[in-house]
Amino acid sequence: MTRPGIGEFLKEQRRTAQLSLRQLADLAGVSNPYLSQIERGLRKPSAEVLQQLAKALRISSEALYVRAGLLDEPSGDHEVEDAILADPVLDEQQKRALLDVYRSFRAAKLGLDATSGSDATSDIPNPER
Image 1 (cartoon, rainbow, N blue to C red):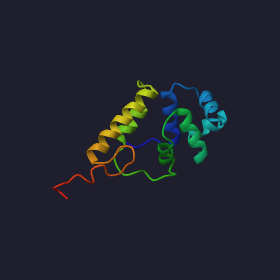
Image 2 (cartoon, rainbow, N blue to C red):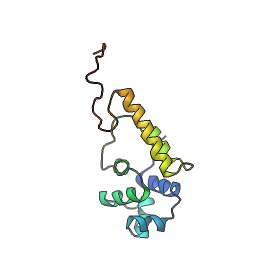
Image 3 (cartoon, one colour):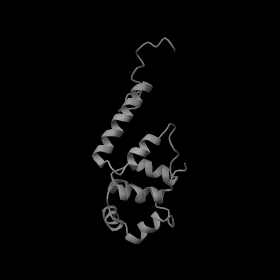
């Protein structure tokens, strides 16, 4: 399964947030025609526009930067996070809560402090080291 491009992803997120094209354009401070062109893949948005769209959609700007090819995708599997973000049944607060729980479980399993990303178990002896 291929990942949707930035335009298609933005359109999915807009629909999930139950916003019209005009509403999202107003919230993000971009023109309606420009946003339409982005969604149709005719224009590539700048990092600043992506940040404004992420804020309006209440999603991670980093996720948009990765989708747009401005950042390399971080190592690891993001299919679960993408599925949570794309779920049309969940509201934004539920998505944030699920993502927080999911990331904290992954961090705990990997031995990382979920808030800082540092090794939280470095002073705990590990017989496998």
